[in-house]
Image 1 (tube, rainbow, N blue to C red):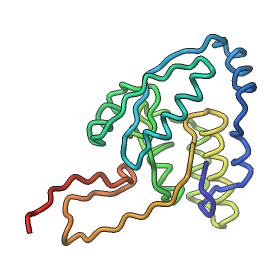
Image 2 (cartoon, one colour):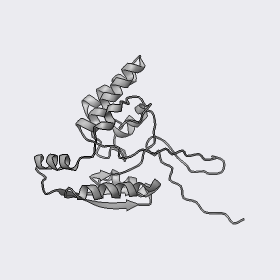
Image 3 (spheres, rainbow, N blue to C red):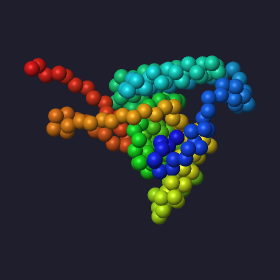
Image 4 (cartoon, rainbow, N blue to C red):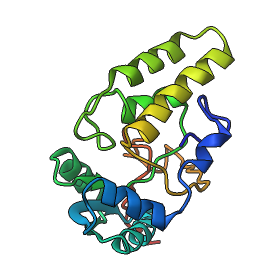
Length: 196
């Protein structure tokens, strides 16, 4: 889901993923997975993302879905393993960047840890191009909404499970080696304490 005040946001999206275990069981039965299935899944410990993933895994277990969860403390190793396609599902945290920047990570920017299999869709790409070229805010918003709706609802490439505010502030003169961009929006710091 796109966060409020971002290009492409529509409040209706918050109602699409309502919690309904009976409906989930019906959909699994209809898809031929009445007895469930299993897959490998990764999650970082950064920002306690693993706690949210554990809650989702427990919920899935009630449906007969078994997620073999691997937890990582090293984001660099996690990214390497995701890009090596070791996991069918990966949970991650992601900052609230402008929709056109997020799109490069999730929808059409080539293989990244957020789209390791480099899945693309012509309708998604056409909507993103229309949003980037739009001359009015209304047209831009509608085009980005169409792109994200197609990716999340129609194609079920990914979904949001929670939203929280987080601000990262650092002094570049005192902390070096910090690299934050659209492919690495979460700061992964390791440090040693100097003796005083």
